[in-house]
Image (cartoon, rainbow, N blue to C red; front, side, top):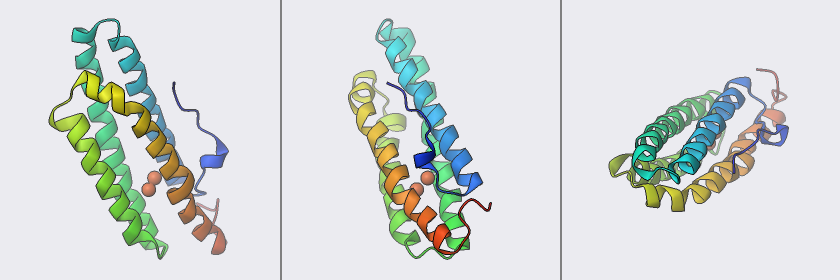
Length: 140
Ligand SMILES: [Fe+2]
Ligand SMILES: [Fe+2]
């Protein structure tokens, strides 16, 4: 099942929101590739591994840029938030990059999906609340 972007996911900063939309699009492509791999596991693995790598680097790059924006806007939760990113990136690296395995990725994809949505809805939106408190929500 793929994820739909909703305004309830908005952080109120256009750079972060655009990156989140891209992140969801890339994760959806990985979900679709996994569905297709069920029919042809040997060919499907190449496609899944490619989309898994795309998602990993998309999340990693986004995390660094998000943390930089949090620092720029003096968000007090940036260190805790960055630790959360680092832990998740480590788990993604093990699963998606080090030894990509079709069954392991398939089993863990629902957890990745819900962890990403949970992070956007709760942790990233807390930064949005910070922007709101500064009167900056939706201004960039
Ligand atoms: Fe984040
Ligand atoms: Fe984010």
